[in-house]
Length: 215
Ligand SMILES: Nc1nc2c(ncn2[C@@H]2O[C@H](COP(=O)(O)OP(=O)(O)OP(=O)(O)O)[C@@H](O)[C@H]2O)c(=O)[nH]1
Ligand SMILES: [Mg+2]
Image (cartoon, rainbow, N blue to C red; front, side, top):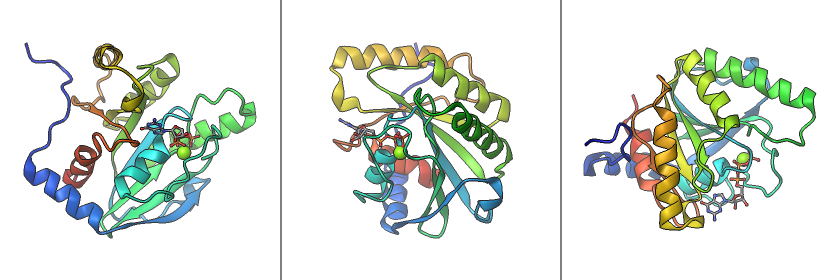
């Protein structure tokens, strides 16, 4: 029986397109704190969303092969702006503020949530939101909130599981299955997931290929 949410498996042509795209180089463009600060919507854009500390910045670094491009910190909630990266001259990659950071002041959380909502609902060139889920934990209640927001915003989202190097095979399989199950009730879910490790490079080629084939 075919799984409703199989693992992404791009063909050789897509892998090559991904390699080519990322070979063009990536640059940090700007950090945005309000919709008025967004760059012109003149190219395909993807964003990375996920709980604080899930590995968003590390994944952007792994994709671009640049150790410190997106600040990967040990301090949860540090990336508080919408950070724009230009990939060659044809794509934007966007590092979103992490959610679920319990120690952040309520007013700050509200402000992020409002901006996140405006961004997801208002950015016409946003082609896909990658929602990062920790392979150690699977989908949690706090993740469900953003999945529901994406459903309502009609933004296609694709789950990228992170930190796969931190779990054994049994946990990995159990949590991949848990994610596949959780996605069934989300109409905006793209029906393939990607398992990654920024540390080991697993899944990085696949994700590059996916980003390169979005039009
Ligand atoms: N072992 C391992 N550690 C990882 C991996 N990805 C990220 N980490 C670690 O997890 C921590 C958080 O990673 P970040 O990339 O800063 O997470 P983030 O989602 O950008 O966090 P915020 O910006 O605070 O929302 C760092 O200590 C990373 O080194 C991975 O694939 N494997
Ligand atoms: Mg970050």
